[in-house]
Length: 394
Image (cartoon, rainbow, N blue to C red; front, side):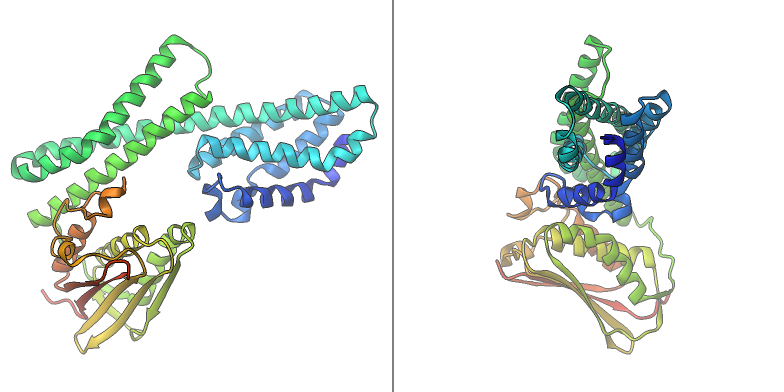
């Protein structure tokens, strides 16, 4: 019985069953937004190399296995997988391979059966080791990049301190928790590395890296939102209007936010009756406005839908609205939602809420010479309406 040839013959079914297993695995969330090709990654090459090596464990095939592990680690780091998700992928792959080879393996003498199973485990361990080493290296490089960005944004914050004293007080309060986590996990990671020169891809080290990266990203999000608001208030932002298609701008925003809605099984819809004509508008600021409103609607909606409606209101005006079926906003909170750093009852329960999103929206609308309104009832959803001019005049 040639186990290597059997694996090669069944490789397509192994791939199909593995993809189905990953799709059904609730603990692997990062794969849900990937195409089939992105999911496959280097798996076909891995199975071919394993099949050859099961017949003849040559150095060339082991090198090929190591290379597939490196490629997989690079891709999963770029796609935002965490360490547990990658480990689960390999656990499922091991199960699928052994399931498909079980009948063939049972035909072998006992000693040869054990030898073949051990060899399969060894080959997968070679791939896993290279994958996690490369994955950890990518995460460390990303951490270093974030550190550089934080240094740059910190310098800009220093320049704004004198003119933004009140905002800085609020900002410092929001920065305290994630910054403490960054310092704590970074210190733990460094102390572990100093005690041992072992491979930095151990599960505990990887979890520490993930904690640092998650909190660092949140910190940068808070800082960038605060800086954006400061730029609006200082009057340093200038519009660059140009002819743009509203339909195209809407489609681009929906394409970018569709994965967020899919993760919560929300229906993200566009209801656009705006005439097919180009209007003069700053595309970047228009999409920033829409992105903030839609992402906010998704964040506070657990079931149902988020609908974007666009229509011409008059000869010189058009309206844009974002309606959700979410938690709603009480009348008392509606009077404060556009204030910087204000977070209502629901916002205080979310770790990624900075209280700056709607304040930035209000500033963008003002910059675009428009008007914004809100209609909402608790537990009945919310509609944010924006009225903007069709033509830009200096």
